[in-house]
Amino acid sequence: MRDFLQILLVGIGDGAVYAMLGLGLVVIYRSTGLLNFAQGEMAMFSTFIVWTMWSLGLPMWLAILGGMAGGFCVGALVHQVAVRPVGDPHEKPLAVVIVTIGLFLGLNGAAQLIWGTLDRSMPPLFGRGQVTVFGVAVAWQKIGAVIVLGVMVLLFYLLFQHTKLGLAMRAVASNSESASLVGIPVPRLLMLGWGLAAAVGTAAGVFIAPNLGLGTNLMQLTLIFGFAAITLGGFDSLVGAVVGGFVVGALSSVMPRYITIFEKMPLAPAFILILAVLLFRPEGLFGKKQVTRV
Amino acid sequence: MSSAGHLLEVKSLGAGYGIVEVLFGVDLVVDPGEVVVVLGANGAGKTTTLRAISGMIAATGQVKFLGESVLGRRPDQLVKRGMAHVPQGRGTVTELTVEENLRIGAYVRSDDQVDSDIQQWFEAFPRLGERKDQLAGSMSGGEQQMLAIARALMSRPKLLLLDEPSLGLAPLVTHEVFDRLREISTSTGTAVLLVEQNANLALDFAARAYVLEAGRIVLSGNSADLQGDAAIQKAYLGV
Image 1 (cartoon, rainbow over the protein chains, first blue to last red):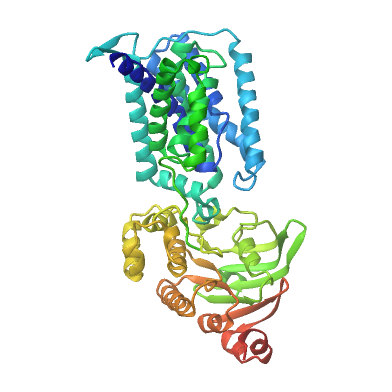
Image 2 (cartoon, helix red, strand yellow):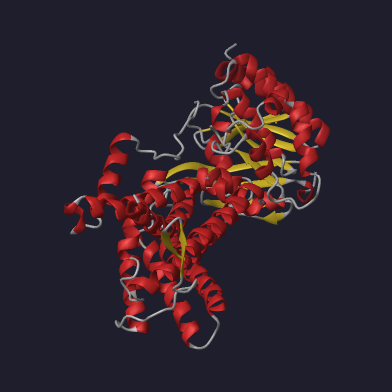
């Protein structure tokens, strides 16, 4: 039992990070109706910015803020240069999806050019210590991830539900034509959405890098877990991304421990989950089913 | 009236979709506070005219709003200048609540009267007040039409473009929508440019009318005169 709890808690800590990446995916899905395959690479890129600032001697927290600001600029730039010119994502969904796949490769290549192919090491934000609760050891880093995730969700909730800007972003996501007819500058809000998504991804990268080492393939596995998380939670739900992240983290941690076949296929539980959700509840646990009277 | 006095002045407006031309030089004017209707059958180019004026599609010719040439501006830039457009098919944001729709309608405003304006709409349309926390998409056609109009007026426009508000509504509901529109236009001094197929209703509502046929204005005049016009009666009034 203690063993199970231990593994479960590790999984939930990982899940918090998947949820962070998932939040970025949800933000872009809500503004464009599309999955952003470059989400992980945007996060990797801004994590390198954090690393650069930190290795230049800035304190870690300042480097993270800098990385988020840098990530925001990268996301906004990506939208202006690569996504917007392709056209309205609601009219040409495939074209934009393919652009995000191109961005995946492009950002990865750019990061290799700038930072090389060697893995860099980054210190854990919350140290390497751990606490023991009821005989189960939990790393501060994992607890920190859950807290940071909680703060992020709260901030997003306040933005979307209690600010004019958030309301405008939701209007653009729901119906960009109507949004433009009430005076919302749609392209500018989409740019903002991409920037925010990239900035959020920075947090995920900062938590993963100390474990995996910071290389250009930093987020590639995590992106799959992030996809699984929002598929389960619902593509358009912030809460869903969080719950989905925790469940995916827990499953991916627990299943390989008890079912031998998953030891060699760590991604398999996530894939099975994606498949099962798409088959039985395509809108996810918290996703909105469209109700429209004509 | 001199040209400077027109609120909206459209000259030889041409527009279309891809290689399909729909408008071939539409001319019309709307003066401040005036209610004007563009009549036309299906496919005459009524919706295209409004979409070209409000910047939703590319157009050629001249569109002057408040004396300034606005052709090529995006719709959101025109809303800021005081032009609001209720598109065909209502144009509410279905995934926002009724109250959020009204609030987003005031996006271009920065004054502190938004809340009291929303309350006024709830009093004017009690149905909207009762359903303020409901998603707009779950309301009936008539309610959504009311909401779409209220949402557009929340920007306190000088000109309201209305695309076939009667479409898909029961006659009784349509009458109610028009009654309310008349009250609002009179009390706020908002000019209205309406496009309609329902000529009876529209000519009662508007002071002046244009008749659009195959992308051209073929007739214009006071509503009363047009109501007496034999050709109009035959083509649009079913008399």
